[in-house]
Image 1: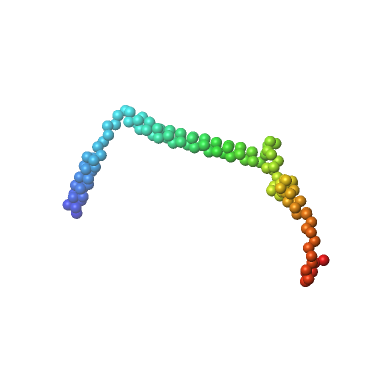
Image 2: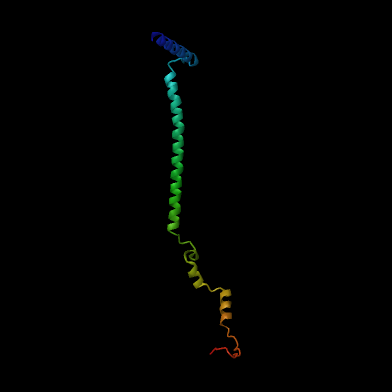
Length: 122
């Protein structure tokens, strides 16, 4: 058993040695932590800036939506009354020359036609 443990310890030591060679220690100086915090804050600044722009656009869209809704709810006095009436109202009020002409034609009496035998008109 002790031979097996020694072999495992030697493999572990060789693994740690390979790791130290692959990942050398960085030179830690007095400016390491301030430099690290500058990098972190730079990333946070871009996130905060993006968040502010997004909030600004959302606020602007909400304000524009409210303004458009207010314009739709309360029509101004300068709106043509034609746009405030329904289609049926307009048809009822329409007195165009074409309509008057059609009414005149429809009211023309047709000449009496002879009654044919078997026709039961009064």
